[in-house]
Image (cartoon, rainbow, N blue to C red; front, side, top):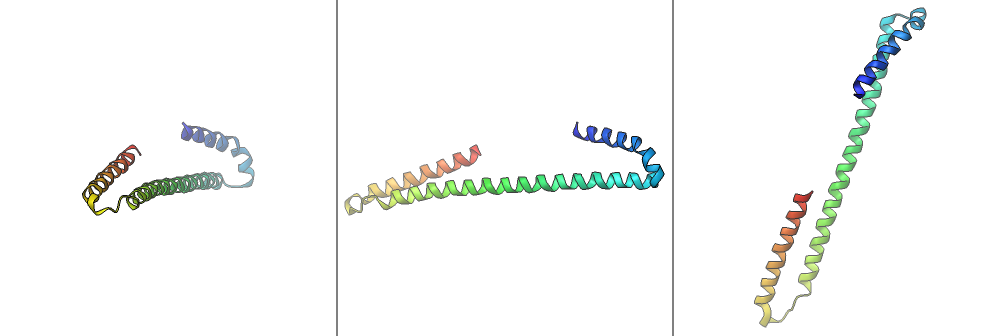
Length: 114
């Protein structure tokens, strides 16, 4: 729809301004000027939208990396405060393995939701 609106505006402008333009310059030049203006505006809009989407992409990647870092920090803090008793070493190892697997599943699930 926006393209058709631009085409109608271009058509009306070309035919309504042709009387004014005929006195000053060649109609081919006015058509070239209109196309130059159109492509300049279109190029500006494309570049602006691409830059905006690129910024949003990197903001999203940064937030995902920050979330992963927070989860890793939580797991490493949890591992730092487990019991150092040699009698409970097997229980500690099982706890660490289960915790690592659960955090891996949490990370996998969160990435699937994104």
